Image (tube, rainbow over all chains, first blue to last red; front, side, top):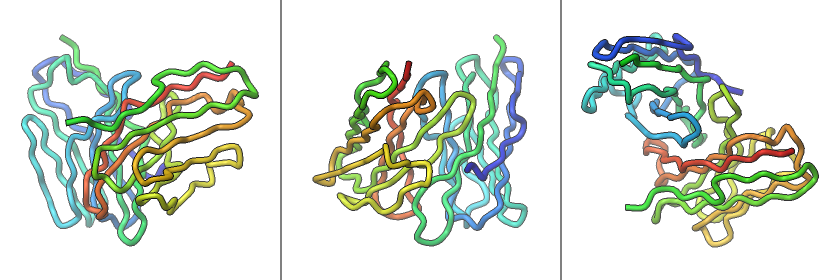
Length: 112
Length: 114
């Protein structure tokens, strides 16, 4: 079963605007990873943030993590039509468990 | 730099037939994962290997599913007696040992059972 919850489920914005996507979880995590998926394609890794980190940046992407609230957010600044895709957060629990557990994803549409 | 490679990318099969998917991980990655994804859903974990050892299997992996990684490099996922409910994208991923490392995914293998 999927244990992460992303919010909103769908987001439609104008090119140039910022897009903020949120992810919540219920367990203790080692890290949380964000992925992008274009329609019919595989998953592209965006950012990994560890439980002892609060914020990470990569180009136009900014990810924050609040372990006290068990939530993370992905911000895409100055969005482009090419950012249109589904975005997933995936958590990796602490302990020996090695797998990633995904949410249902957020569908982002960026209108040109 | 080659990423995770999956073959075939698309497979259409008749119900009751067997299918096999192959995954070649990023070289030197000792962990290999299989996930399944249906339309509108996130990927669901099936199984993972560390080297040639299969360390965890999901309850989603029925007796009709078997995965192998005989030499600790490539892996195969076989589905026997396919059912229409098996129609999905099967994703392979790999990583270096250590829970803090990035997991990289392939392009997936689409299965349609008719």
